[in-house]
Image 1 (cartoon, one colour):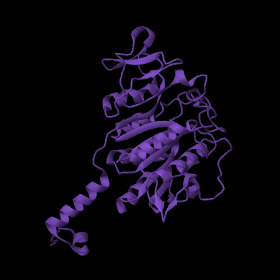
Image 2: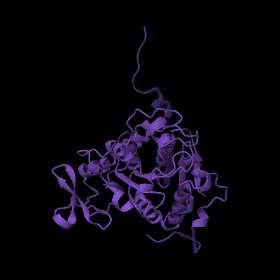
Image 3: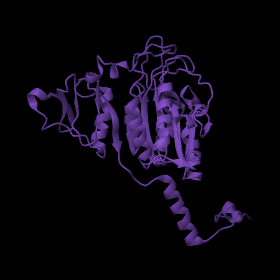
Image 4: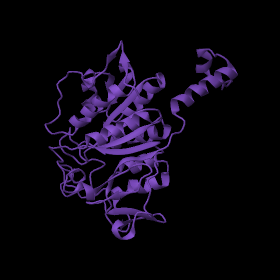
Length: 343
């Protein structure tokens, strides 16, 4: 897609910088996410005035202040609901939702699952640092079991949410994962999310250097990432390992790690973004749920399959009713057609 131009002036990343002082802690992964979003926006082919950012409450939700676009720093956990209204009112807008793991999956959990189900054509960026940062280090819905925090001094006793598995269970049409320490990968995933017509859910592993430092470093550090992370590419086999010598084979519906040097590559699992059954299995690599074996963490597009979007169905339904019934007065709509005579 060609970059958007207006009056022969090419937009640049700096055109999406609001100029406000960025008030995140030094080393926060949010800086990288902001940078990558501003980097790709000139190339999306969208008029600048059509971008809208909606956020809830939390460190991540300051994002709206730093983007030179329309936007709203809204209510705790309610970003998805407000963004739905924005998109329904003006389907031409490119709507982006920014939320944290606490904002999205705790108080905002109900709105999150219903946004996935309804499938508005919006983009949902979940900044996951597995902790409550703005309120100073309490455990969140994605904190690992046993984690010691200010609100779990003896370790959490709860099972954490797996955001990608949750999104798939709620009928999301696009699910992907990336991380703050891999800028090129994040840019590619964000572009794919924008291209997808429907609710695009992108989980971003984001480091909190103050309250949960290094939570995801194993997936990006040179010494460990080849063993701990696996990059998903549509139509390509699932291969990982220090020298690319490990692969994943699917035995019925059970993933199995194999040694390519011994077993070859002919029988490896080929990633298919449109296969939801396999997408659910990939999302569960997070849980190391297969025979107690630890699997690499998947990054990339886990699932992508377009279906009709909510706002178009809504407009179609309204037009259909108008055609059948014609215009109706507001008083008649409000009074309805159910009346009783009280004697």
